Image (cartoon, rainbow, N blue to C red; front, side, top):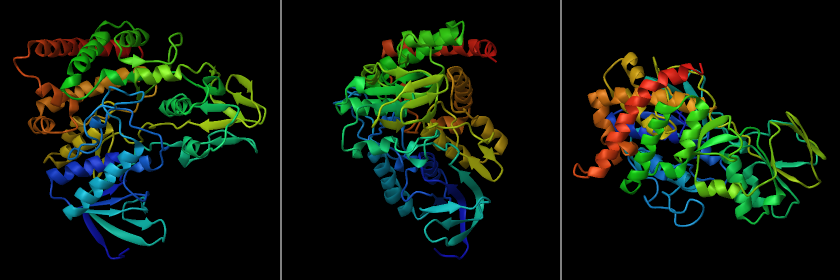
Length: 467
């Protein structure tokens, strides 16, 4: 590493999906020089640490960078996502970002990439993790922090509860290496990682009765089939969006809202008799939910407090355990709330969500707004932060901020023009694809827009009821 001073317009901390999406758009909209520094050995962020059977939760078309499509735009032909828009595997995602780096970013001559390095706390330089060599950096414009998502992956830390000696507890990454049967498989965690792990066990022949699934909190999941890219998915997608808005307008409470969303096939839950208390933007297909519903040994006694040789201690009781049981820790915390309150903060840009559950689009739009010749006040007005969700009411809170952001974007000429050519603006591209002579789809769009106005009028009252 050259110890001489390195000068750049932007120092980007991270090379995960958010950082890659931001840099991709900044390359198109400016002539800036960019330095990217990341702790991993290749681009992709947390995808480098994910379990080998992970796939995107949402269609590949919604992910990646603006300049390059992820996947081939087709549908999955086999498996539990059969008939729906393709979901890239974790390996495909990592390979995709590697191609973006090596075929677009580095050949531009304006991006300099330093893997296996860590940025100083003050942003004045970075150090190599393997050698300790330090590189000083002069940032002419801004530091871009792409680490706020802090996506937690079970393989990167020990279980958050004590595990007795002799008890085997592994992250999902270890499952393909198990190599021998166990009398019982205990899956700990009720989020998407837990669902993925249960599916993997079932798809690999484990008897449902051999699986114990510890579900600390039940969750609402988005129905993947409800929002599908491309004109083939237009009718169901926009009917569903209209029904979402109509549900908001008619709901008497958050519980009533989710019952309406469930009735219109927008959300799914594990058990129809249990009202979920968690919502994290996780997305599943109906076939995936039916698959994990084959598991009947579900433990709902809160979080695990400790695992002992003969019992599992939970918040609200204990259950017996047998010898040689295999425990799979799926308790990753997802995306925690951000520690900052603004996207544009003086000499820093914080990459956070500005459209619900779409971080790649959000980072791309933030890059475009950064390219505008205006002050931080206007930039932040265009990029109100959507905090990561945790509980069901957060679905509504996210919707309120997203709708307000969308109205500002539509009224801003430059942002509106960019939205019209952004690959990641998937739903907007579908609307523009509707022919004016298509009476049925034009009527559906009118229904959706009318329902959106009604929902916007109802949102404040509904939110004020829950504080």
